[in-house]
Image (tube, rainbow, N blue to C red; front, side, top):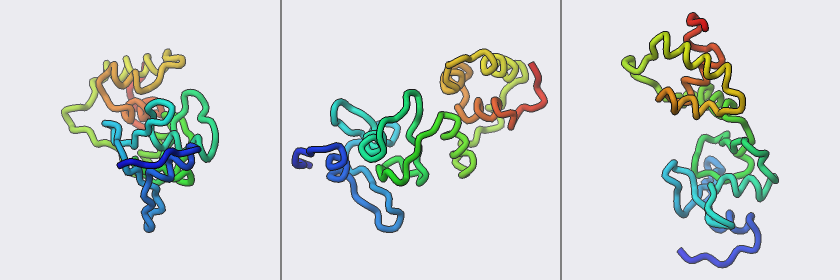
Length: 156
């Protein structure tokens, strides 16, 4: 698909979305990142919803996420986007019932939970996603352990 040159980031996004009249989502029409998010190539490759957020709402503070109220990875509607931490994003998913369920054979042993709790206590600026990778669990599991919403009975 050949599109005219866009003078601004807003114009760039508007030329590459299709608005869903029911949801008001601005669905990205072009290439997708393997994670499912729209991929924009304006000033280097970036996620389309992040470009849209910056174009309409301004800079994204370092280390923060652009989250979707609408839960649609294709959506670039700035009214559907909000800035949040990794924890905000996970809590949003949890509240909306979009949590990945783990099978019973994936439950953690008590010692693994203790190790995770120590890693969380001592993590400093280390993202929870890194701790999740280290322990081969989802970030949601780490978040719930951190908030004492699961494995409450296991102390360090």
